[in-house]
Length: 81
Image (cartoon, rainbow, N blue to C red; front, side):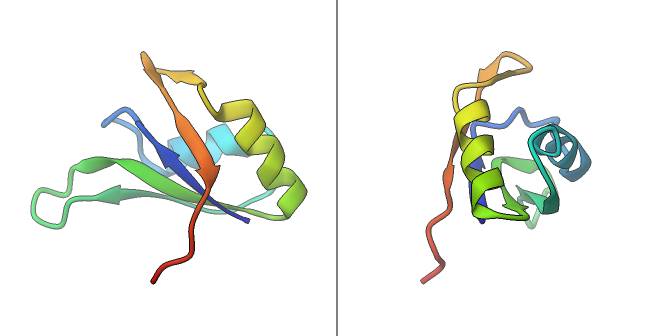
């Protein structure tokens, strides 16, 4: 299951995101989206969990989770168009 994670602190990296979500299950990939020109975080990312059940647990656990003073927005990612 692919999960959108928004309102990330700008200091968050891929490994930070992977470490956080691995608390609830197998993380296949974790990626913080960065600006092409500045290489700075854009404040959101995507996590791919090993199964739908793990994905739902991650959404339940981390939606609204306070990370470095920011409340995360976590939900199922919509497919790319």
